[in-house]
Image (tube, rainbow, N blue to C red; front, side, top):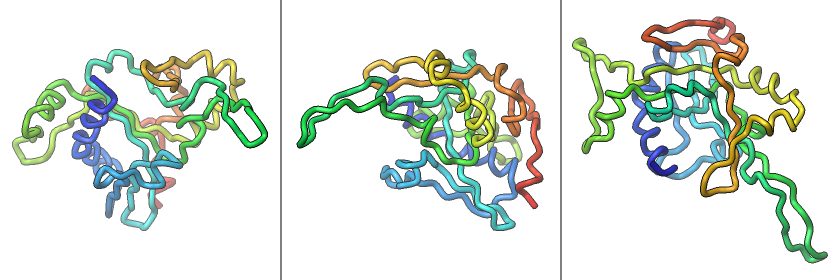
Length: 216
């Protein structure tokens, strides 16, 4: 599948992802910043996909990524590390100068949380139909469409890993095919558990952090 196919599949996950938000938070309203296929400035500059407005007026910013079910075995959190992993030349009025590697999402993101997960195989198969089909329980409620997911406390996570020397971070990156970008990866069983608020895995939700500090 191409990047465009992956993006289209991720968009189809919105109803399932929003069900997760409503299960976790007392939500008043959800605002997405990619309506009409136009990228919002918050998405372009700060990699923020969604804003959750809680019943108490607090607003939480989110980034999301839902990957194909076949990727589930990797159980790995990935982020864009470099938009351009190579030093490159540009022409200026004073001559040619070298520009350093162009930073990616890992350095620029400003969202409060990152919801990262993997499609459930049956749910994925059904949304790829034309028209897409969503799975419902007998009581009319939407089923869980993700096999597993994690809600990551992003500032704490990034503060921890950005303290690593750059050579150590670069050693965890992989180049992407067909572009100059590279992605950094973290195995979930190696991420300190205090950086994950809650997760859904093996058919059950596990709360690993305290949400009450933001719900007051």
